[in-house]
Length: 115
Length: 111
Image (cartoon, rainbow over all chains, first blue to last red; front, side):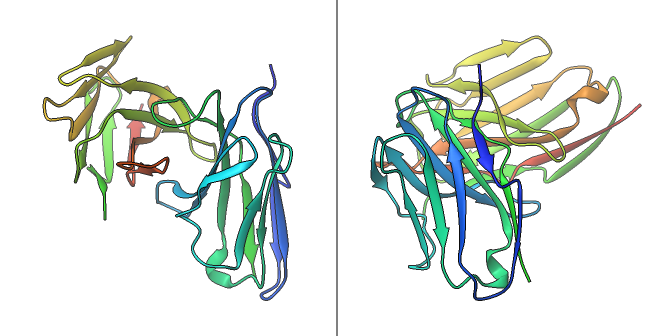
């Protein structure tokens, strides 16, 4: 079956601009995670959704970052006033039920470059 | 805060040699997961360990969870070029849904 998909695969933007990154989880998966990964580092947790609600947003670095999942399926990560330090690969993962312990299935990621 | 550390950061081996990566948590973990990320790819789930002292095998890969549930290891016997990639361990934050990943061990295999 289809895995987790993310769009766009690459996004280049200028400092100060607004960007949206989209994640389509595996059908039927109720849990959805957003991570960002810098070169040579492990994925860094940003936010976790169980259904439509953000059950844990403790990883969002500041109020420029926001994520939604209005219908409990597709999720959008929104970054306002982008900064060069936001450049990274943004990964989305979904899991059947959510919460530890549960296997997370990762998407291919969106590579964000802020010039 | 809660941390998950991995050593070594890099490992170069000759094809056929064994490889081990170690994972240490600053706190007791309810479970630990291992992922593999190929160059240019995304993390792919390998296995999850839940019980104290648990040992699981997948072909040439052996995974262990420490008795105190604070450390884990992944051992690959007779590495192959297809084993190239970065191996991450990850554990849940105590009392939350946050998953904390180690920085990973990048494995290079020379044919």
